[in-house]
Image 1 (cartoon, rainbow, N blue to C red):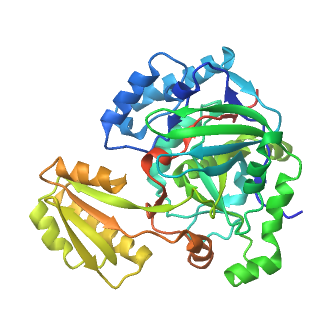
Image 2 (tube, rainbow, N blue to C red):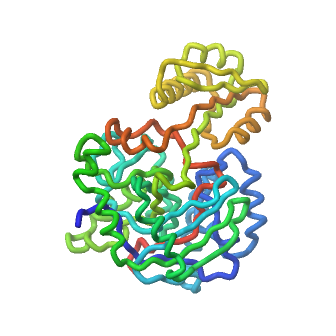
Image 3 (tube, rainbow, N blue to C red):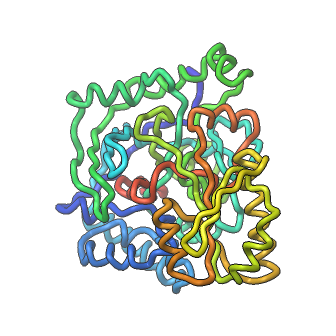
Length: 409
C-alpha cells in the first residue's frame, strides 16, 4: 500500500447537551466584523463551547497572552471535567448543508505532518495551495505549544473524480453509528457526523496514487495525494510545532508522539458542495482618490474595483494567479509609503458593506478559480499567492467540533 499521509486516529467529540453552542466557526473568519463575534458570545452564553478553546483572530491585538493562558486552562478543565468522549481509532464522516449548498461530505482524520511541506515548490505528498506567510505562524504557535487538544478548521482536498471514497461512505451511512445531528449557530447550516472504523480507508486513498493515473492527470508521476484547501497557516503552525517537539524525542518516540499528526477534514475537490470563491481585498484608511489613481496602471487581470457604491470592470492581461500577485504587491507598497491597511474578505455583500461604511476604503474583487484545475496547477507551478481563493462563503467554513489530543495522556 502506498503511503499518502492520511491516518486513522482517536477523535474527541463533545459530551454536552447543546452541540449548537459547542461548535463555532473557524478563527480566521469575519476578522473585520466584531458584531459577528459579539453576537456569537451572546448565543453561547455560559455553555460549554469551542469559543472558549480557540482564539478568533479579531482578538489578536487584544491581550493575547492572557487569552491564550485562559484557553489552555479551559482545555484542561474540559478534559478533567468529562466534557469530551474519546472515539475508537478511526474517522468521522461529516455531512454538512449550508445556506448555499445542499450537501458537502467530509472525512475527519489525521494527517502525518512528516508527509506535509508548505514551501511553494514542495513535492511532498501533502502540499499547501497558497503561499505561507511565516510571520502568521508565531501567534498561532503560542496557542498550540502548550495546548493539550487541537480543534481543526483545516480542510484538505483530494482528487477523486470518480467519487469512490467519501461519496460511497455517504451512500452507506445507515450502517454507521451516528455521532451528532444538529443546527450550527450563526446561520452556518446543518451538520451530521458518523463514526467510520479504520477498515480499508487508507488503502482506498492509496489507490489515488496509481502511477498510470497520476501520469494521465498531471502529465508526470507526481506523488501528490492532498492539497490544503482551507487552513494553510494553521497546518503550517502544526508542522512548526511538530518540528520543535521532535527535537526533544528519540527515534522511537518520534514514530508515535501525537503531535506528529494534525486533525483535518478531508474533502473531495469534486464534491458538489465544494466551490471556490475568490478572496477579495478590502483596503482602508487611505486617500481614496490617490489610491485609485495610482492603481490604474496595475494589471490585476480580470477584476472589479468597488468604491463610492460603484463597480468598475477592468480587463488586464494577467491570468488569475499573476493578477492577484500584482495587486498584492501594489497594495503592500502603497501602504508602506502612504499608510492604511488591508484585510481579506469573503463574499461580495460583506465587502460592499465594509467599503460603504467608510469614506477611506476601496474593494478589489477577483474572478473565480476553476476547482478542477487546482491539483494540476499546484503540481505544475506550486502554491498560489496567499488568499487567492476560499472554499465557499464565510458561514460555510468549518466549525470547530471534533478535537484530538496532541500531548501524551
